[in-house]
Length: 73
Image (tube, rainbow, N blue to C red; front, side):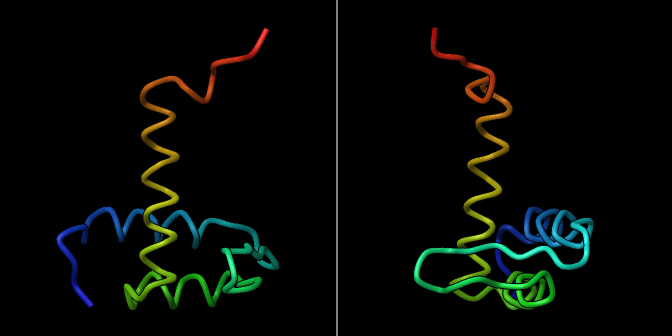
């Protein structure tokens, strides 16, 4: 599936590819997904793939606006 987010989808795919083998991530009620399963979902752009893209987008937004560096005192 090609989405308007094609370039960002490719970035997310590349970031997952860079993860160490054996990495797994839990996403809501989808259970624990292996690296290869995550890659498949992102490539297909299905519901789980779109959720991963959404998660990565939120991460980059937080990185950009500095909220990752806000510490409670």
